[in-house]
Amino acid sequence: MSQLSSVILHERPSAVTRALVPDGIHLVSGPSRLNLAGFCRECLQGSCRDEAACVAKWGRYIWVVCTICDGVGELNDDGLPLDDPGEFGTTCRNCTDGVMEWMRS
Ligand SMILES: [Zn+2]
Ligand SMILES: [Zn+2]
Image (cartoon, rainbow, N blue to C red; front, side, top):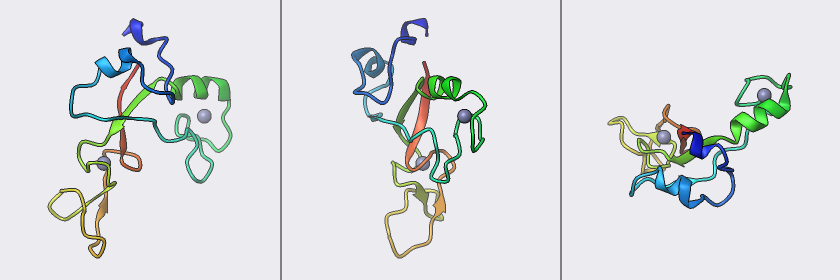
């Protein structure tokens, strides 16, 4: 994993990053470190005690399209990606807005 320490995420995936993800798994840029309410997804605080550390840690995740919900973010009663907008789904617990952490560099 040490070879990954220089990978900078939230940029175009480098060849090194791409090589870590098998065919059929789609690399994406991850969600922002702060959720929509302004809380840090790394330390779970509204105001980070060490923001620089949170930024650095968050930047080391490699994100891909969720393999459970195919990026939809919601599942139907059968546990398959929701595809009917008239149907109530349940939020996919495997991802954040359709993207999931693949690994941390
Ligand atoms: Zn934080
Ligand atoms: Zn999902």
